[in-house]
Length: 430
Ligand code: HEM
Image (tube, rainbow, N blue to C red):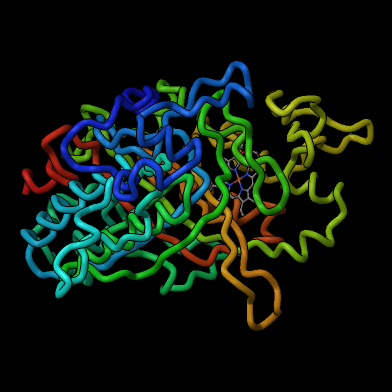
């Protein structure tokens, strides 16, 4: 973690902030005031030990923000397909997206929200008056951008990183192609849903003629911890989710399991990572009819405290050897945490950063179409996510209550330094 932990300095530059568009008297509220003044919003009231949370998360750095930066509560994810035919069009799009993302993460519009009466305004306007809301926009490239149906679409095929390969079909998958794949992934996270939506909407608008939106996903509650001091949130099954995740403060684990290292190939990916997204439907009505003891045995942890079965506190270690007096495993053999644990997977770990979703009602059953938009970051999906999910899909007790419906993988571009743009290292190698 570098820049992202530090509170953002005051908002320099000549462009006005979104809030300034309304005038200082037009907006009240602590968050808005703090964002406009660049003042960190303290959380001292929540936890005396917790560090202040910055109002803005810096865009520039060795890695893109939105991965090992504090987790916000709202997600708007979009997967795009490229319709352009020339590499130069993609490069120009990523250049213009970079400038827009820089502005939006500083709480500014992407251009004028008012201008000539005869023209549509450049910025769509719905975020005017809102603070930056810790917006992060994280951009990745899908395997199909490099090669599709055997075709080198943009002259980039030879630069496709080996780890960037479609996730193979896995047992139990019920994937909907309309909720899967894509040439470019854009993950926008913020503390305000309008800010996250505005970011993707404006990028989509700028992308017209070069990309079309393939699928989107709204997420409304984080299911991972941001760091050591961050209380663990709960998923829609009511369990604490993220307890045993890699902490964003753990730079050694991030270097080992998440970031593409400085000697890895292809060199243009150094500082990047790979994201897998899985839209996982939860059958929450079935879950709600399940006895507490069965719920806890399914996960392998206590519901309220989050403690591993057989232990007293949330952060106690899993004891995978412990047996009941009757000789059964305290943490059952098919419990989710046992099967997912690094102890049972040769030390393998991933950085999870999922969000809850609810997309109306399933017309066939009148049940909630809700679940977990699971995303994880890693150095090599084929040796991290794939073996882990293969094991889960074969043995996890949780499978009775969930179904994987969407899947995608993206090479997350390295971070950008001032003056640079997203994807620069790729296009300069082409
Ligand atoms: C709807 C689906 C899922 C639900 C409801 C769920 C829920 C949970 C819960 C409640 C925990 C315990 C708290 C924690 O340590 O975070 C956990 C742990 C974990 N989950 Fe999941 N999970 C789901 C899907 C997945 C998938 C698809 C993967 C990876 C392929 C995964 C990997 C992990 C890992 C690595 C842990 C930590 C295990 C440990 O070392 O203790 N989960 N999950």
